Amino acid sequence: MKKKHKVLFVCLGNICRSPMAEAIFRDMVDKAGLTDCFEIDSAATSSWEIGNPVHHGTRNKLKEVGISTKGMTARKLTKGDYARFDYIIGMEQENIRNILKIVERNDSEKVFRLLDLSKRPRDIADPWYTGDFETTYQDVLEGCTDLLAHILKA
Ligand code: 4NP
Image (cartoon, rainbow, N blue to C red; front, side, top):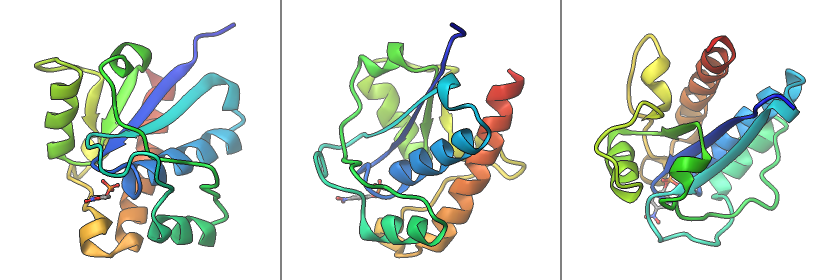
């Protein structure tokens, strides 16, 4: 069987942004008929929300666009995730620093921000603090679209 592309989305709590990216990216991959070519997951850099379900702001925004987050719960990134995944995608620069600390690397080509591939590279704001799940959704959608194109042409 062909090698799977293994993608891990990471944010601070794993209840707002990274599960949003996981669910949107999975939906895109499924709609492209590529389900079997991908393994997709998400994780937190903190322990704060471990075991908790997706934040209602993310859940409600995704429900509007017909994407379910049922059964998803927060987990913490582990050192072992580094070897397991091909792409470890943070939402903001602080995530990148914390990811590298947890996986004990100084730098890595497979660790970058979701919007580093954008024409306008930038952080994705944390809706836990901003309350603005719509802007986060638009940013995550842009990032996931560019990421899928990037992986498919790699
Ligand atoms: P996320 O947002 O990193 O996008 O999941 C947050 C979720 C929870 C907390 C902070 C940010 N918290 O402080 O518990």
